[in-house]
Length: 284
Image 1 (cartoon, rainbow, N blue to C red):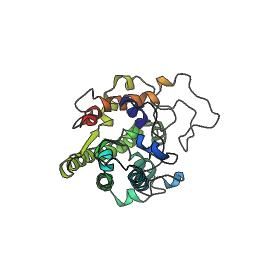
Image 2 (tube, rainbow, N blue to C red; image 1 turned 45 degrees about the horizontal axis):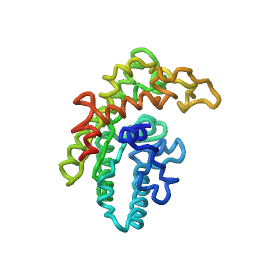
Image 3 (cartoon, helix red, strand yellow; image 1 turned 135 degrees about the vertical axis):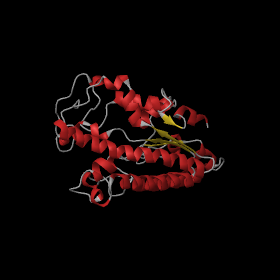
Image 4 (cartoon, helix red, strand yellow; image 1 turned 90 degrees about the horizontal axis):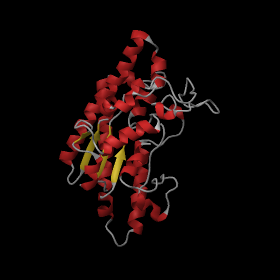
């Protein structure tokens, strides 16, 4: 939901097509490579079924670039790609569907939270550098939200002091990733010529929005499964979804995505985006 709303802010009339269905000159409007359950790490989300990891998304983008080169006889592909804005929002699943699922993944026994944040950021930095080598020059990188506070995590952590410590433990791990990501964005700006990388402070936006603070955030809008966190087929749904922060027990509602995307596009606070927001990135 972040990318479509960001595209609306950039005055795109229609949603950009997914890679699976994008055909012909349609790819020149932009392509959506996102995949539910995907992560920075290739194994992330494998217990959830098929998903397209960041590395596979990069391969798909390479296919798109090849098609643009074939059909772009009169214009420079490099010049075209340099004007595109690449929105990257990934990493939550590397925690929710990897690090904090020790029954399926060994990462939490191999790495401390600090080490894992470094490993993730190093790999993501390499992936972003690959995008740069393909011709990308404008990058909007979203930091992770406070995923320890989503309903499925709150319910799995339980209530009371232990539950709060469990939620804090996850949010603290995510914040280590965010701090590292902001540093990597600064390094990429220094090291890659004619490129502009920006970092969107999702946790900061989430904790300082009066609108988000007014929403119901401890339960989902729909009747959700306690195991998957997704909506139960034919289950009940709240009638006032604009008052809820989460539609199911994992994914935010459109009103939440609108707040994040809106402040990413036009920062309301100096801490919302570093070194500047998406509206300024578009002008670079």
